[in-house]
Image (cartoon, rainbow, N blue to C red; front, side):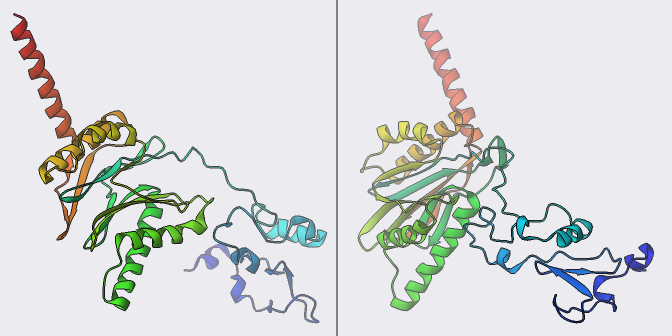
Length: 322
């Protein structure tokens, strides 16, 4: 049995007494107010249909600047009808941005540096939103193609979306020209695509780590269009702690094992001091053969190893003092 039969209501679209005739015609059986159909029947199954101007707004200004009809333009008769048939929360007037229930503060720890063996990228796996750990096992180093990866910091959804867009554009370039775009070209392309969103709530801070015909390359790209080239970058709320390890340990002549050890140590120190970073560490190595991923390691084990080293050092000092 249908819900209409139980409640003894008639569906709006099944009401034969109401024909959809625009307002002002001779057959005036339905009243239209701001493109909202209002039937004279007693049906409560009237569906809210937004006006066209509300749907045609710019995605950047959506929810911030409303172009719909203001409340002063609505006649008294229509206002009475609207109060009877529609809730008072419909966007007839220009709406203001809805305040967030809490500040959307988020943090992470990502790093990348160049050495003689290529480029090494490392990041933690904790995605946070204010004081909430949204995901303890997220992937913040995203492969773009076989010789290019990107560390992401900012809003997770924005970073994932623009990584997919960049991957698509690089794949199309490779199909058209028969060769991959250089890391410098990929960074410039991403910077030009992000620049129109400067001043919006888009938050993307990516470090592109790649290997092309000129060797290893490292570029930092921000959502405001900033593009920087360097040999060492650390981005996120835990970057000050990571820099303390990287500045004294990163050298050009490092081996792959030494570079991996320094990167793991830097992420561990950052996660130990930064509340928004933690859980596990991901490490990618990009060389002339492409990128390789090291097995994900739980930083809790690194913490226990550090505690054991500290205890052995204390016992040794006590023994020597005796």
